View 1 (cartoon, one colour):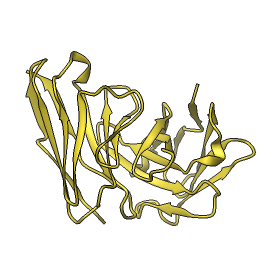
View 2: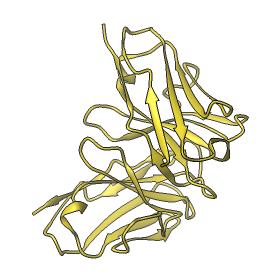
View 3: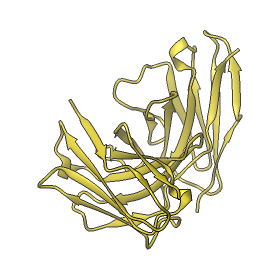
View 4: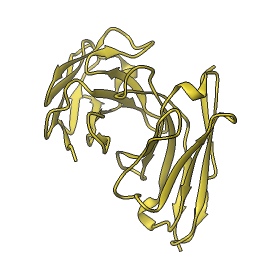
Length: 107
Length: 120
């Protein structure tokens, strides 16, 4: 099983700041990695797939990068709507696995 | 509007069974692979099961292998999850999820979820 480790657990930032979230895989997943945003009481929302492709309707301030074992989700300038929990997920191999999540909170 | 609507969640005793359903609308259901993902209260996301668009290939998390069965009826635009021998640790919100066209890595449409509670 491929283990995804997200860091940090919590990121405390102010609106307008840049957020950089990390996801590290225990073995290579190529570019088969996605990022999701989840707000309390809501289903997750797909942000990025194939490591760097923005999903439909996702603002350009969200970007993904990386390949192999190291991936990054960047939010260039945080808006109030962006404070949430973010998960990475791989589907290079079965079982499909998720990271433990990074909470982005208002500082 | 593209939509997934789950149903079938309930309170059930350990060892019991449930069948979850997910009705898809607003897209050609038979064109997409589908999955179930769950989230225990206050916890992260856990993939449960997956099925190919044609229904031939199915995959399961180790935690549910042999107890859960995923299936689909493309004529009814419906995805199912048969859950047998339920355990307390199966308690979660279960999401029905569509796999994005052309890539296995992304799940682009999520239902609101249906709650399964396993307790005596």
